[in-house]
Amino acid sequence: MGITSTVSEGIAEVVMDNPPVNALTVAGWFELADVVTAAGRDPEVRAVVLRAEGRGFNAGVDIKEMQATEGFDALIGANRGCYAAFAAVYDCAVPVVAAVNGFCLGGGIGLVGNADIIVASDDATFGLPEVDRGALGAATHLARLVPQHKMRAMVYTAATVTAQELEHYGSVLRVVPREELRDAAMEVAGSIAAKSGTVIRAAKESLNGIDLWDVKRSYRFEQGFTFELNLSGVSDEARDAFVAKRDTEFTK
View 1 (cartoon, rainbow, N blue to C red):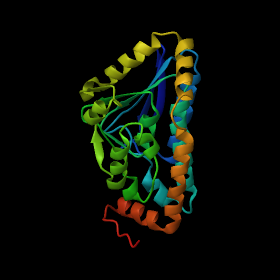
View 2 (cartoon, helix red, strand yellow):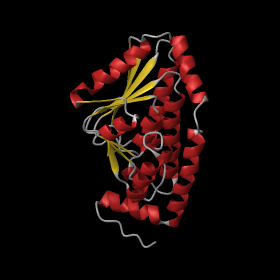
View 3 (cartoon, rainbow, N blue to C red):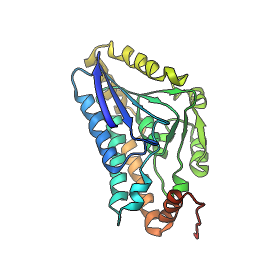
View 4 (cartoon, rainbow, N blue to C red):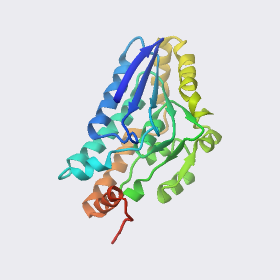
């Protein structure tokens, strides 16, 4: 369990396995960042497949850890850990293919939104429940998956979108049955790994260089509002309600 990485035929396969829902702890986010970065630095690697075991791809931060930690250390750690992991995917020296199964929520959107290519299972759904949790963030990455007005509606309502809808938008390359997901992702990565590693690395750097906006600065801006919401007290109530599995009682 945890974060593992194996390399075969030029492909690094990075796997998240943190039951029950692949919600990562602070340490888990930093570990993921380190593993993805190391994979990109390996001269034998020409593509990375990022996938998960279990019920879903990623459910974001471990809210139970955050609520069980005194003070703001867990909140700051989660924000910094997510920032590091999202940046590691974006800055990875080789293309990252995200293979998404089941749910992809919160931090999961940050990962796939910064990936180069997305392949998804036919049961995959994507969403940002942040507003319901008294937080903000990863709209930067959601905006890379859906049109602007769709993104805004999803942020405000915490609604999800299906893999089939994202395939329609062109942000998901392929939708396949769940049992075929790993093979489909490895096939896409294999077509990249068959190219010159020198050219592929140059292509990744060049594409990042012509990106329309700075995803790291944009995400950091979003995170500032999460801190404000937390200081207002509304975030604690939202997270306590989530952990207790009760309705949130907002007073403001």
